[in-house]
Image (cartoon, rainbow, N blue to C red; front, side, top):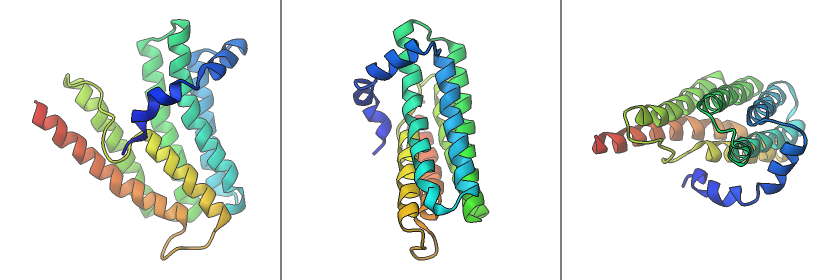
Length: 199
């Protein structure tokens, strides 16, 4: 169910954005930094702004996800792909995830759910890179990949802006934290079990 599998399809629509980045003189690392800035800005909006402004945060989350694809496409198009750029991209992605989830938890005053979501997301990513470290290749599968997480946060942020009341014990955005936490930990376990079977 991971949207990361659709990345090749999304990359077909990237040409105008790659061309625009070239014209602006942006490097792949520069695009990665801008993507990170979008995530931090979204986290700030979620933390400090009223729900009516969550549409802005949702748009910033979408921008983070889209630019996270553009940086790689730009690197390939310009021959600038490097291990350093890949490392920077992954590090900024993790900090972006934390900024988003901490911002949401702070805005909702749901720090327990925030902790559940952050640990689930970080362990999912950790398992992907650790599986690669033992020689099995980078693992993107599971219940929720990064693209799924960003799509969920963006959609639930927009839904909360349009309907800020609770649905049961949580708002739509609160439920997103629940899903991210539970599915994140399940995805981490799923990746571990799958990798273990191939060792």
